[in-house]
Length: 243
Image 1 (cartoon, rainbow, N blue to C red):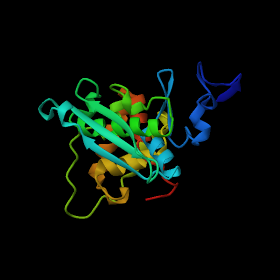
Image 2: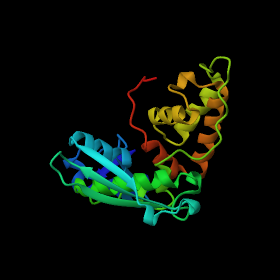
Image 3: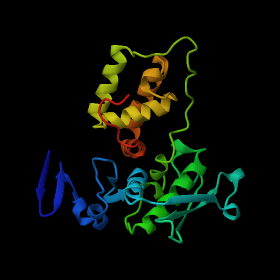
């Protein structure tokens, strides 16, 4: 239950500054509910999806991304990217760099350093372009690495005969229990599940894929809920009832 007092939002025993204290939050309509901002380890962070929404609402003309070969070493899984954001067709561009290697990404995304580096570069360029001073969660160390890619896991093969349109009541009940227990956004969980199962819609996933996802979600929520929230916030919010 939230109570408001002296510009602070108190949740249980911990408190966090109101998002009104973040200058760009009102200017760019950044929202916690939409996943634009996240409170982590005593600090506010903007998310990759939040920055992309700012760019879209501001009619960004384009984003160009390229690898920086001089600073990259694929054999060592070290990558660096340069991103340039063009706010308009006449804009000369705002440049940001991002890097990633096994030492500054989460173990859950090992092997996805290239995508993490690209996301960090885009985030820095967008923050420069739109004057957003708070750091993006993807730019910080091990937790930030969650957002650029799904964890490297082995997906069960798609069944050749039909799909698992309807998971068993036990699987659905277990998923609902995880969502309630860890206070997760059901729509973001659905988006993540679709990505995890490698299907266009969740209805097309097999029962085995859904069961594998539920087990994966439960394990991650227990081990590192903050990292899981980062992963979920990387997906655009879906409308209720979307397939």
